[in-house]
Image (cartoon, rainbow, N blue to C red; front, side):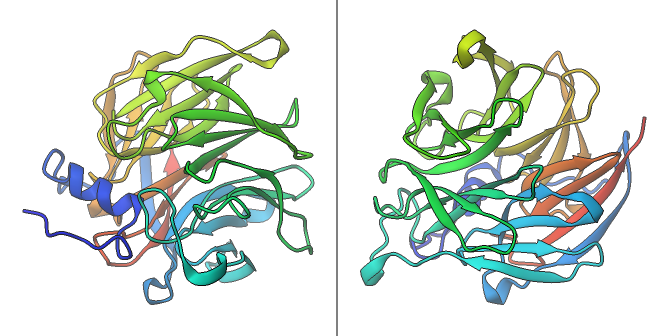
Length: 321
């Protein structure tokens, strides 16, 4: 059913789609409660490699995105205009050994209150793989090295403690490092975070005194309490049976969340008890959704178009009470 793809042509999202398409065909239905008014707010250029991977929101309606394959950080205006803020250095010699990928991966991104952007870059080389920082008007700088044999993917910021958390999808590890930089600490490990052959720990968020992570291979949502002294508590599985899950965003209703399901071309609403339902599909414009975020009652969904190869975009929808 699936043709073989060269490593230079595939991405994390593409392989997820291939692995899960047979499990979850996209339904024909459109927006479902509690979402409404879904629309495409920005189109990205697939010919330029603009496959959006992760998103961070800013005041005034601005959106910051990482383009996975172009090594770029971009700003999207409220009207959909795209401005490239930085392009990260290419690995020397042209040889790329990023685990499971055939290209350098620009992944998770967060924004601090002062406008500083933190993001992840994986090249398979020790000189570039790690956590990077971009201050307003500045140039990108690596502030923490991460293992070159890993794949830093999801990123979350705890503004109260000025701590960054990183999900390594290959090593099955959650790292932590202060926003000032330095040597990362292996904050949490366990079989729940490990992959089953491709990618494990993926999306990452801070919510209600815990770090929440997804496991793409296992289709799970995990919660790890932040204990006194910023120690990691026991890993708890909060939702299952969600193949191709990538990023998550909390709605503000207790532990209810929205999840981007890359392969099935869906966004799911996950209840605190772990039950879930589909609220957006390809009929709403989803093209392999990779990340999701909320500003007020507006839901932002980034779509990379890994295998659909048709209109990577930013979709906005309204979250109804």
